[in-house]
Length: 624
Image 1 (cartoon, one colour):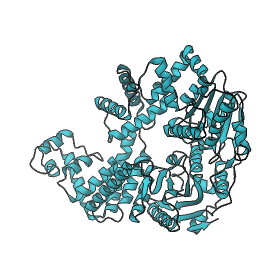
Image 2 (image 1 turned 135 degrees about the vertical axis):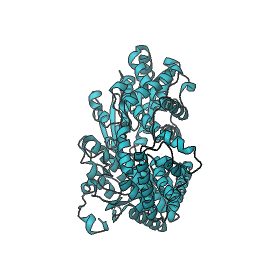
Image 3 (image 1 turned 30 degrees about the horizontal axis):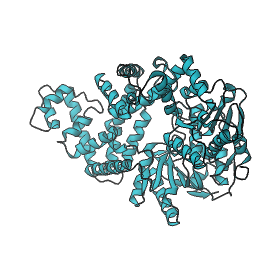
Image 4 (image 1 turned 60 degrees about the horizontal axis):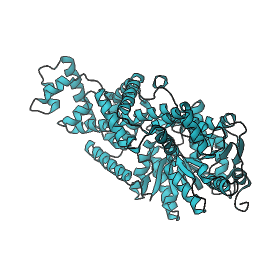
């Protein structure tokens, strides 16, 4: 063992009884440590494999660890599983649940869809609304909060409370549970039923947990009960890679572990076997700025490595083209295409890079499944304005935008117009019940359509948003729905950017349809990883590449607009740290001077790496 493992790895593997916290930096061989720890327990310490529990976060990770352990002729009987699978075992024995009672994702979505319809909740995109509801519902459950004590993000509080009660009531009546219930109901059973709790405490002598930095409050509370009173809990993770705050994860669980488990032994796997020395140095400088963390000094076992490539683009379109150009050069140099990744902050950013790579004929795959930007309701609204300007008889387009912004064209008036033999727009003008003030709004719309028709799509969309007042409509809608206006504006900005280079509304609509088709094709090819990886920082977790591009490193993007203070800023910094440490050798950092016609300021994270902010305005490429 000593010939192949680092002393700190051996220290962790050789730990005896009691709690242990293993701080495992990026590329530090944590999976090897867990597997060798299991072998030591069974082969050297005489622990029965049937009394060892290994918990991971994904089924794939559990299967991979089980396979690697078996390949080393490890003794059979060790239980490998995810939090959900282990907790469901407990519920199945304690409550008699069967797999048939677990809601599939489709059943869950369809059930909520019916409840939303029954409640007559009016939203622009029901699918988007359902996703947001479940995001907040899961966060509430993960934090073990009652619905009355939870403040949802992006949804009206009263509406969220009412819909939560309807959904929970439906599950009770139909004797169904979902994956969120597995956590909360397991917590309830373990905390309230002493017999069940003691039976499961006696079931395992040793518990090992991978990716511990990703645990939420419900998972941590259940772990505390399962490990007691022996507390032979061996947890492995990196507080600097805790990036799932939106799911309830927090580095505080790692930071508080020694306090919650007195006598905890702590070891730091401080050798990064993945990254070059230069990457390690820069990443350490950035993450060292965070306050709520364990202080660490990561070392490498490789040479300093290639210099970092930093370049400046005038806007996001130019940045995507420069990125695609540099990727083409890497491929010419012989780098395998699967070894290249572009990692960005939000899904919306992926579209520009997908378009640039497609134009060069470079294959790519969207790891996160892609954000269906071109089918979003905002995209359809903007396209409808342009299409209606060129096709006044397009009733479908008129119905989409007639009250965006508010023109007070009522449903009754529209129904009256639909009975007439003309197109809807013409019919509205001659409706007997049309009021003077409604007619004035229609005349204003007609004039706006004439102005739109005179302009090329990019300028036409700017006119729709700023002069017609579509952005004001988005602001009113966001306020009414308690949704994120900044997200809506970003979508509108990206669609507007897409219009550049098109000559007519019809051409723009066709371009949108083609881009939508491409994105859907990519989404279908989930198992196909051939091509450049396009992914968010969150989606890149756990991956490694030979070359990584981190684009759009500007304030408001990374750190994100909402994450510029306190704990939110620290999580943004951890996200950036995760992105930096995905590369083994080549790192490309880029900054755009403008985005959507708005000037940007370089991300503070670049300054924390030691770069002089002035460099971004004097040079368009610098190596150091």
